[in-house]
Length: 171
Image (cartoon, rainbow, N blue to C red; front, side, top):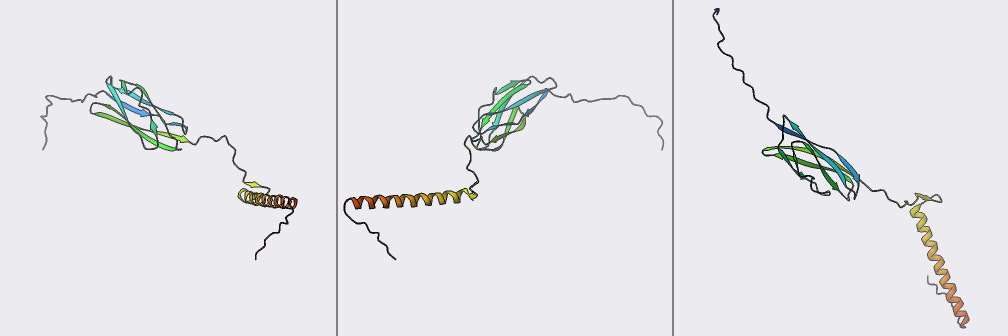
């Protein structure tokens, strides 16, 4: 079968116009424990987006965050989230950026490192002995010296008073 009489009478081309929208990203942050670390949240406009985007965050336990500032951005821009912790570790915070029914999430990582100590640590070895053994021996020597000194003091005191001090030895 052959068709030779085919005609195209009309052509319809449908196009879905791309709606305006936005993107959201968040940068990682780090600080020493007890200090604030700040993450930057960036909103990017897509296809002429100019509406307002509002922020919310989900903060894990162990991390304390200030409110996102500013809490809304019109069209495109940046906001900041500052957090701190007294416990060293890595914390993931989810930031939701919403405009009406449209919501995008970005996860930022806060890394809190232990603060440096200004006190020096005890040496591992003292005179070739483990530090715990050295201090145990030193404590024993101090106790013996105090006991002998006390005995000598009491003996010299009793001799001056005319009394003889005799040690009591039991087996």
